[in-house]
Image 1 (cartoon, chains in turn cyan, yellow):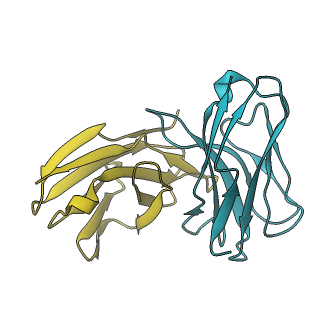
Image 2 (image 1 turned 135 degrees about the vertical axis):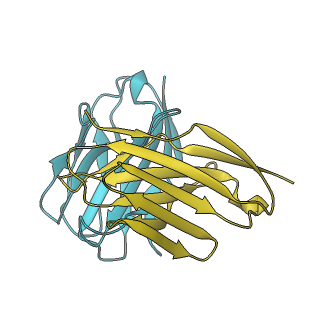
Length: 112
Length: 109
């Protein structure tokens, strides 16, 4: 593993289903983030974690949950997917909240 | 509210110079970032400004004026591979990044 990996690369999901997007980094970064990117809009922060064991809500947290059990992993869960959650999801990490963020390759999610 | 404005799209010629502007209104300011994003790929870091003035890094330079809430990214000697979206982001008082929608730069031969 080099940098940040995300899985799956893409997914088509039926509305109402539960889905977990995975994110793993091997840079030992303290902070991790989940963003969604929609056409015509800037990246919007869903949830973040400044260090293992802590999480916080971003700009658009409704319908999403996260956990940070260890430094490397930061999964994002959609408890009951809705079509408005169709988007490209990016995971990012940084050494600290003051540092530049490094992004994973993204997960393209379609909810039908 | 918080707002980052940048042009939606710009076109420039290979070998030329282009300036991409970004204006912002945020709750607090703790630095401004520029990222490059090729279509279908992840954003990658280009530059960071926290003090007023110009930061130069090879063919790319970034300028900041905190009093005007303004930044620009200057790309010199444009190459076809510079065709991408350029994202401006401001770190606010909570140390979270507020992102602009991005400027799509099209380079023509």
